[in-house]
Amino acid sequence: MRALYTAATGMAAQELNVQVISNNIANLRTTGFKKQRAAFQDLIYGPCAPGRRAGVGPGHHPPRRRRHRRRRQDRRHAAADDAGHAVADRQRSRYRRPRRGLLQDPDARRHLHLHPRRLVPDGCHRPRRQRPGQSGAADHHHPEQCVRHHHQRAGPGFGDAAGLDDADHRRPDRPDPLHQQGRPAADRRQPVHGHPGLGRAAGPASPIPTAMATCSRAASSRPMSRWFRKSPT
Amino acid sequence: MQQSSLEQANVEVVSEISDLIAAQRAYEMNAKVISAADQMLQSTAALFR
Image (cartoon, rainbow over all chains, first blue to last red; front, top):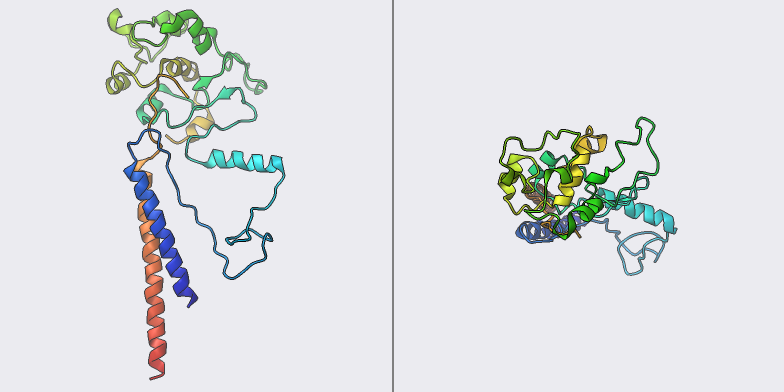
C-alpha cells in the first residue's frame, strides 16, 4: 500500500511541477519575471522527534548553523542559481555584477564579448591581488574606458545618440576591430557598438546601454578567460 | 539597477520545455507505479479464489 501512496504523492508533486513550469512559460514575456522552480523534498513517513533532523513536519525547524557557514552556503546557492543574483566574489569584490536578466540577447552577449563580471566595473579600481602571469596593466581599467570618467567627460548627455564621439569611448592608439569602418560620420556618431547584427537587431534606440559597451571594449581586447568559456549564454 | 537598459524576464523557453517533458515523464512513471500496484493486488486477490 505504500507504493500507492508514494505514487500518489509523486503524481501530486509532478502536477505541481507542471503547473509551475507552465506558469513560467506563460510569463515568458513578462518584464522582470523571475523563473520559479518546484523544489522536492523527501517525505518522512511517520512522526519524528521535533527538531532532531531535517524533515517535513510540524516540529521541524532548520538546523542551526554558524553564521559564516550559512553565508558561504548562501553564496554557493547564489552561484548555482540560474536567476540573476549578485554574486559576491572574494577576490574581485570591487566589481559589481549586474543581474543576468539585463542582457538576454545571446547574440549581443556573444558579439560584444561581454564578460559578465566586467560589465559594470565600479570605478577605476585595480584588483587587489594580481595573478602571477599578468603584469596588472591588462586588468587596470583605462580612464578613457571607464564609466565614471566618461561621465565626467561627456556630461549628462552621455549615452545619447548625439553625444558620443569616437575618441571618447575608444583608445586612439589601439585599433578596434569591432568599430565600423567606412561609414559616414553622421552614422558613426551613433552609439552602435560595432557589430552590424546588433545594430540591426537593436536599432538606434539600443537596449544595450552605452556604459556596458564602453567597458566591454576593455574586456574584448584581451583573450577570453576560462570563466567566460564556461559561462552559459 | 542599470539605467537605460531593458530588463527582460529570466525565463528560457527551451529549458522550460525540457523541464516540462521531464515532469511529464515523472508523472507517467508514478501513474505506471499505480497501475503496477493495482495489477499486483488483482493477481494477489486472484490467488484466493
